[in-house]
Image (cartoon, rainbow, N blue to C red; front, side):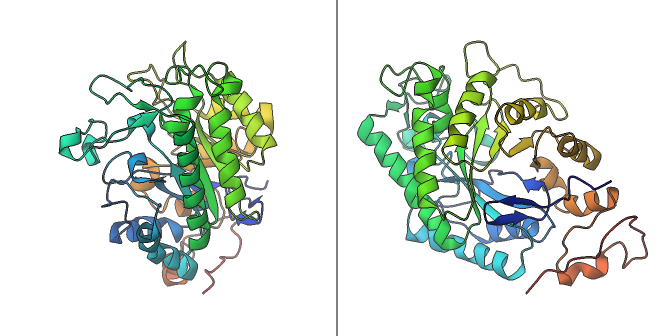
Length: 374
């Protein structure tokens, strides 16, 4: 029987060699939004690791859109140039498509970095004023955001467009618009953070209006032969918040607008929400959205075992699986999954001597190794 996890997937003009996705993970290792040697090492290890798709961390489209002062950005020539070595490495040595997640933190911006990522950063300690759909802070101690007017909304949309064009010029294969984890576009989607009374607030058809406008603008700005998708927090996990049913409505609108995939996460817009964290705890939500819309879907959330990942894709709950902390612990997870499932994952030529067959370890049912082109 064909292995589902290692079956290629076409998204527009980009072919994923398998269904394993390295999820975006904040590194809190930038200064002024600039990529550095850490990012070259961090993304480089995943780009040669036989994965299907690798994403950058959440990348701010303007300085005030960063989560912390240490977050990656893409808004000017300096931040664009700082990413060039990473893209050069990908072109010369990589064996996976490379995607960038573009986002704006909104009312959850201006917090400390590293282990203190959720600690609000005062203005006199390097913080900055924050914005949001409404003047409702995320939690006690957080700034009261300035409610965005129409000019403010248009300016942020223009920042997303600018970042998408720069990402295209750099050579990224995929863009993911960040509408999850309590950040700006999620804030518009959720009735908890969006208390507007204009065309951008009220029912879900209005609350999705601005995130949809941003997606459409990014889709138009990025090359038409490359995919653009959206990451969502499908539920706030509280009774008066965003629901899976709301997210299905949003997903239908995205599909009609030409969205190529939806990456299904949850939570982070409500402090201390009762989230039932456990192995694969968000997979059922991804499956519901996929069943309702037919969109290519990425499931994420405590997916750690190759058999678990294979089952999710084989049973049609999702088209791809994304791993985050599992990848931090084991950047060679895709290689181990290939051995466990009797498959092959791409290796760089320099590492072929470490392939199990080269070490005399049989890999039942495995096909020929595909060396990395130079």
